[in-house]
Image 1: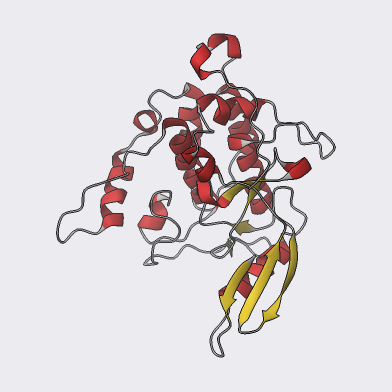
Image 2 (image 1 turned 60 degrees about the horizontal axis):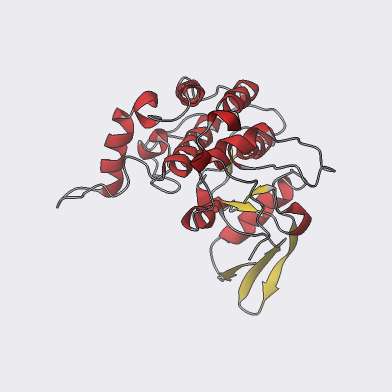
Amino acid sequence: MKLEVALEWGGSRLEREYNVYRAISGIRGIPKMLWYGMEGRYNVMVLSRLGCTLEEMKQLNRLDANTVFAYAKQMVFSPFARSTLLFTSHSKLAVLQSLHDHHYVHLDVKPDNFMMGTGDRSSRVFLIDFGLTRLFRNPVTRKHITPVKGLDITGTVRYSSINSHLGRTQSRRDDLESLAYVIVYLVKGRLPWQGVAIHPGQVHHDEVLKLKQVATAKTLCEGMPQPFVEFIQHIQSLDFEDKPDYRYLRSLLTQCVLPLNQMSPTTQTEPLLVTGQ
């Protein structure tokens, strides 16, 4: 449930998010919106109950490289396969593709905004928090928006795209860049710009931007499977209006999965199912 103090003037951010939920209703991996309205002095939106976020699972040491990548290979998008492990990189990409197919970009992709389901959906990943979500093209004409400069940074600095730092209009490529940062964070435990020291007169997100700009795909993915380097390189090659090659990206994620017999015993894990909190 999400609450927002109802104001007598100005627009409601929660109402805008409610309208996004209505527009994308039915996408697999999007929580069901159960009710929206006013209760006392609050605007209220009620969503279907979910479990842990990926950030919470990481803090509980419930994620490792094998979990993040190995489950990607096992994903079968059948709504009747209850035991199918619809998890991590591959399923996050799938729900983002579905969101993009509905003409929206999320603009705040981060581990806190991916949650596991509960009950018979405990192995499914859900994308949440559409407060910053915007259309990137006209749903009727499919005409792409035009780029603008001089905007404020949008999203969470740690995972924001370079274009967001630079004040440029974001598109599909920026959601995927943020997703790449999320995967690196979950696999390696941190990103190079975490904990960056700030001196007097410096701005935090500007210093983070500098580190993002000098980080090549190879240096960012050091110690990770080579196909993931190509995953990031494809995203970096995209222009503002380009449609990502989702099939190619999925194939690269699948190639990141090492057979269990090639992994050391310490990195092999049993399938992880979260039943919620």
